[in-house]
Picture (cartoon, rainbow, N blue to C red):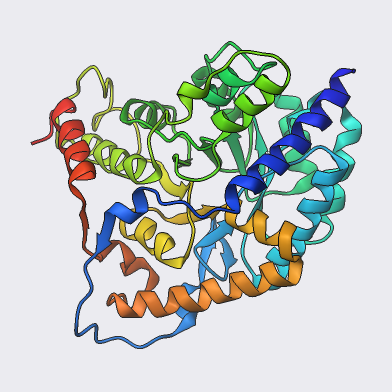
Length: 374
């Protein structure tokens, strides 16, 4: 089997296994966050308050279809359907990884075909940190994204039988950031972000970080299943590795405080202070199951919320129209929730008070102590 065939087989396995995971809505750390509801919210439901922008481009809601797949015929069909749904619902979407274009230029056609289904809507193009600058610029020139999404996936690569073994990426991220003309988002793939890594991204000046924590699609499980099927190593003990989306959002809040000079640097937050770095915009994804999870992300400081597995499963099991109905329902419900919790406008969502169950409260206290915050 040649490299191209192996890639196609891997992508197909990813889609199948991710869909199987998404079919079961599991509990995660969002269930350990409670929003404080005012008995007298003094609001009214108005879906127009959801109108916002993604890097300056108008969208109908603060959540979007996050990166899933790309580079194969099946991926083109999925991305084309997602583009049509995004166009009809007025939300943004991110293509899955387009790294393959740097190795096989003909693969660009699939992305262009999907893009043609939503030629003017806001999209994000996804690559890995080592993608050549020339290929990234080509993708930006041809696909016209509102932002470049750079994925970092050390755990997935470690478990993947054919995965990379060189995780030195910060210089590559900085190189791409300075080489492109669009905003740069650095995204995990379901294992979350720690304080120090968010601080490193702040230092190099990236525009946004998508924390993409554990709680949704688990690529350690997916890649381990592929490895075992091929007679490879068993990394099943890594299935719980990483930080949840909620923990990652807490980590981002700590970095913001450190940048604003409210704590002392330490081994875990080296170089994160008011002289070094600008806090990137925070995007939340990973295990988002419903509009209440979206609201919790917004309340905890996320500007936008990405959804992958839940939307993929509905698309594959019930079709485009069902996904379109689901997204419109989410928009309607999110507007209700914002009013229910007293937010008269979208920007006020981060003023909604929230509490943490003891396990997360303990995590937050420990992380604050490590970073010199009282």
